[in-house]
Image 1 (cartoon, rainbow, N blue to C red):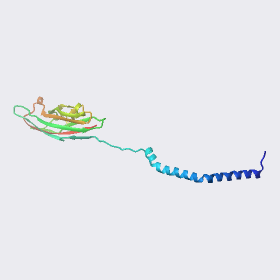
Image 2 (tube, rainbow, N blue to C red):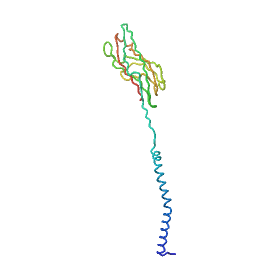
Image 3 (cartoon, rainbow, N blue to C red):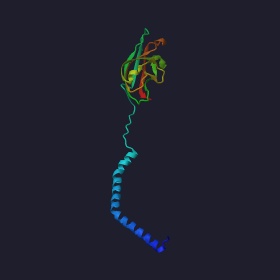
Image 4 (cartoon, rainbow, N blue to C red):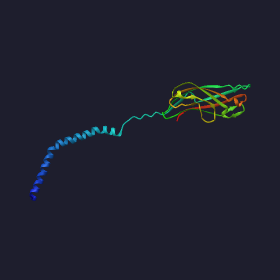
Length: 194
């Protein structure tokens, strides 16, 4: 069966008219639903924005180090008989290092001056012994050696945060037969993590 254009027009106008009536009837409900959806989105947006953008607290802990003294003024006396005096210093070191860092407790001797003038740094020696330690300092050992003019390790094996107290005795290398007189040097100290 074929419908005439007038009947089709009447069916399509009737369908549109009925559809519009349905829309008008649903309009208040739809309006309320849209209003609720918008209000919900506005209220929940900050929560989702925070969740998607992420929030957090960043705490940065930087390495920190302290020494009870920054340098030691060393004075050694060689008497006429060739006896060599010594000088003792108590060096206390405290450090907070990052877990991946190694602790370096170092010293550098300045110019060694004796009765005849400037002398090689290697004539000045030190001997260290541990008096106490905490934390990562328990694994460290106070060292012995001769100064090189560069950075020399006063402690070895120190790998974590903690404290170390070394008794360090400074003297001259007796095998070099230093001449009688007064010998002086400044030994600079440093503590850091790397």
